[in-house]
Image 1 (cartoon, rainbow, N blue to C red):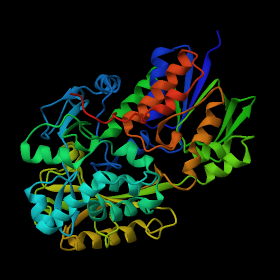
Image 2: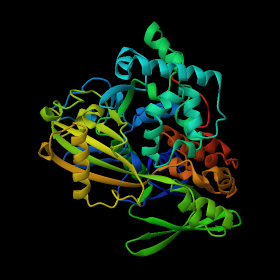
Image 3: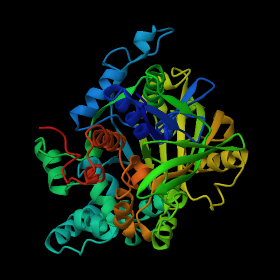
Image 4: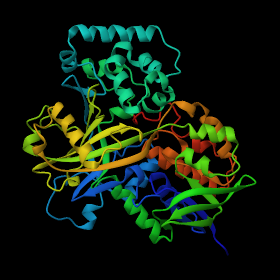
Length: 498
């Protein structure tokens, strides 16, 4: 019997999950993954630079889905103890998840605020009594008088009040996205910030009662692979190959041949030559604009919509600093995973402290701090096009301005990573996304999965869930693909279990 073939575009969380699920549950289907880069894991990869590992963007392993939690547990079991580095470990000890404490703060006007913002004594002290009263009165106004909620700005103001929005959301959002919140669709907020309200924070603060609902951003613990997220995806890739799947690296998909609402073949470029591969099922996690551009006979209107979809690119600079030098800074002996830089004069968006994600990410975690300086940019930006050395100098000067270090002599090493199309954005022709998804869903054997595959700012677990749902459609011969696109639209998804 001739096996059917599933071709998966992208070896990130969605693509790898889809491949693993198909090979596990439908062994009569041949699986081939086409990956453009030389790395496994997509944005969830881990970069190893001289023994110091970088998590590109930071990835907390948390999900409300039991299926996803069980999936992770089978791949890397949870190990609560043993978080202090030791000289050597067996493979069994290495292949684990650690239980980590989530702690993030905002650096604003040289003061640190809890993230998410909570109304407690340290916040009042930092803001001052008058500003705190303005924040509370502004919030009351937002409760009594709601804006029409079509933009992200209106979304924020409805939930936090104009004063808190102006202080902590307006300029920071513009820094991250390169676009003012009034020009961003409100659906970004609906997917990322659900149900947060100051009354619950006040209740938690002043009455010490546990709120029944929590934001994803309020999660205080998360699981994390001992050597970073890439560890899980590299292990998944190994299992895929052992089960008979194949992964073609450094292969850029250029065309998909469509005929009678079916994809018949895919063409990719590798080592200067083109290869065409035929298949029965095609699962795509490549950027939606590139997918539409590569399919023949797509209506011109949709090609234009896809070409106008915006993205935000990403740069992260790993910086190795002597621990004793960073301890003299204004972040001191912090246990933060992230610090959000809310300063209009600083282009840095976030500061990761890799030691606090997992001490095993750092070669010498006893004496050094391994930082990740995160910048949200566009390919046309000046800093994107800097050389590695020039960018390192630029970022070093920002660290000095923030009083993180005294001089460049405090830096022991650095490593720069650039990521194109890291974050799908919600303006421009994004308003036409439903027309694009409707057209793609009518191609019988094409399944769009993952963050870029759906042009949706999914968390990692959501990307995995789109892949699992797509494999269910294939194995159960389900032609209606709306469930794949419905993931991450439910209003209460991010709330914790009771």
